[in-house]
Image (cartoon, rainbow, N blue to C red; front, side):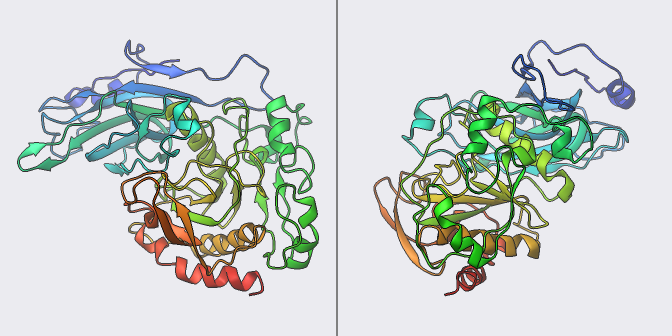
Length: 448
């Protein structure tokens, strides 16, 4: 499964991109799926991986209407080309410890309309990741990467990477740069809500992921129902993995399970990994942009999951929970929503913490209020399971990063932003500014 190549030259660009062209020899694509029968109505996702190359001074543009100056000769990227349909993209490189010091921008062509987008920036932070020295980083060839960007249904792309300039010299870019184009596929009909065929039998991997939430929902359930505070307290003994008998636990929010958003459980590593407890929650923005609607959130999460596993070489999706702009909470990394699952979300501080990503980018935009309220509800419940006051501070041992050396005991708010543990913009200034109020709201939901 390889992308189609189109080199756009002047006025023939639009016509050329409309043609089905020959595959590119240098492009590779991850297999669409393992050899198995897909559940009824399911179309597995796929990944196209395109090597990045130097751009000439006269790099072509997607269409004649584009008046943006061509990238400088020192830039890397891809000329405009037609590819198989995709909805999410990101750039990866070989050395996970290397930083991409530069600006990454893309343009994409919408499937159907044929309209090209303007240039969009891709966030280049490389710190939502497994800890240095962790088994996840040690046991696989983890790559460096940008944040993934959701672009919607697209069938052509153009990329430019401009190195950062310092003292008239261009910063070196990391080796092995590739543009990853992710098609999230289509979920089984049962997940999409269609009245169609009965659900297919669960695979062993899907059974294990669902069984990790035993006591909260039936096997194969697409959601864990919300409970009020009294019911949440009464249900504590059933929530395997959570310490019993705690009086300060918030009402459990409704949580869409991995089955609910259509996770292909054969992508991830089979084993679950756990940390000792949950002492803090790190809040993130996904950096994937705000150009999605709530009905697309499961697609976005499936694409992000595939990007984290197939492109970054992580064991599973990095975040423990995800929240969309409508305030819906989704189960992230497999292992049980009530348990202390080890994530890959805050480099240096994945031990004894949980990672919550709000889908979107909040550097310039305000986070939607339903999403902010959902953070308070989720942390009131999750932290309450471990007798943690959302207003408190705690100390976590740094596993190493650009802000705190490895072995440093770092005082942190129990509800922290990613930037509290790492020098980064995440979760964006506008979401970060909401966290003080979130701590108070979560404590109130716990009855404190």
